[in-house]
Image 1 (cartoon, rainbow, N blue to C red):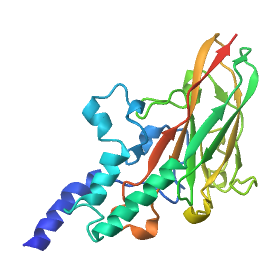
Image 2: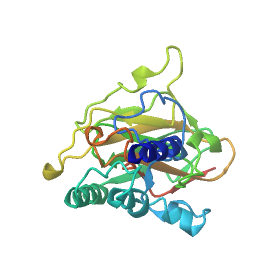
Image 3: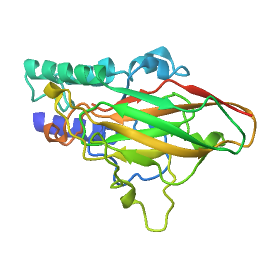
Image 4: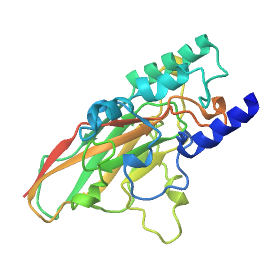
Length: 254
């Protein structure tokens, strides 16, 4: 009877199971936004101003991640852990979050149609991959790729890993003949050692052509990272991913 009940719960829960991608997204090589990682916890409820307060609260780590860690009922993928092990998962995740950051640098003003450089710096997560998206707003479910507001990504973004060396391994998976001027990029092969304060990180540099219409445009970076390794998860990948936004910057196009 117990086995049958668990199977039923498994069947019901599976379609909505949380499936983050600690090893990156080798099949998702396209423009996208943070809505795609619906399983990830949002670092702050403020990223969802349009949402009802209860919904926004359910998206932050304390509710979406840690409440499931402490759950004693299926389909939680943590039920095999002892209470001490569960609290250790939470302790490590909180430490990783406290050491994770992302910034975006862009010129304050540009001429319409000019070429500009926008640089995103990120550090955090436990690897081995982290994701960076250049978007129009710091909104969890309603931001769009930066190109949606009139910017044009010129060529393949330049990726620099935590070792200070350029890398193209992620873009090399892009289909032959397809352009690589994407708003989304993943840094792969990132090392992690919390005791040594070694966290994934790097820089993504975008070359953009400014919009042709004058006005004030916002730009933000979305940073996707994990707090648990895949070898500690069962069939259900745990909802341990995070979405952290940079501050929005305003660029005046004249």
